[in-house]
Image 1 (cartoon, one colour):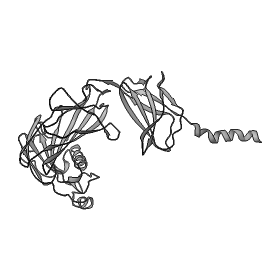
Image 2 (tube, helix red, strand yellow):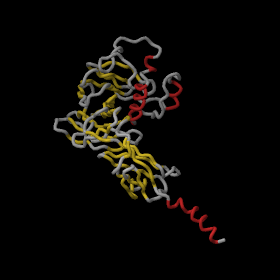
Image 3 (tube, rainbow, N blue to C red):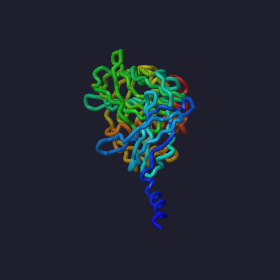
Image 4 (cartoon, one colour):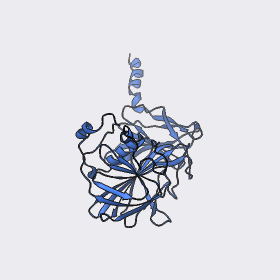
Length: 341
């Protein structure tokens, strides 16, 4: 009788000793990837990431980490100088995990900037500038250049220290290093651009007097550059295509036709409606964009998110039912306006 209980007791306790297993596949070659370092981290509120254990993938791409995660964990895989994150939420299977990696190159390959948005928020004595770059990598290699950086940007003279955050495909925003280059006023962000969509956000301030000229350059070649000011602020300058206002926040959007700008800002930022009021006043047939914060001047991210949504939908709200107005025929680079890709 006692012998028959032993197998049952073993089976009941087996999950306590389950390992984390899976396979690493190289999506560039389409084959299992040997030699990738797969590390298991525990997500801790106080200390951040705690390394639990790690292993190398074998010739078949298989890996085994003899640990049983309790609570949220993260698998971080390092290959060819680039790291890839895979979340392990509580209750999810920890065996048979599929990890995808790519070969890396110092050349951009299929990576390019599909959208570049610059938001100006003037206040007393300074302008807060928020730049958002959307990289689209349609190739099969990751662009990684720690020596030179993947994104280069112009920092106006007198600007404060720039801060950068980057979001990999399917990932969360994390801080990214900003380094000087050999060119004056040009800095570089060191962040790998993996296949898929990557977003890099910059934030800095520049000294400003209302009505004075504010100048900048576009260093990294992009397909569409947009200048944005919040409700209550007027922007004027050469080489701008007036694309109208975003319906919810009333932020004004301009397409930039060249690789440099010299603009004048006047006015102050106005408060916007609350979520409920914006929901009832906005055109119900227009695009639904969530997470609009109640005040524009206290939150930069919502404007960028809303404008990005509008741009992705091809300005459907702005141009849906009205004839094209003079001066709105050209896209940001002087081409016919079409829904941004």
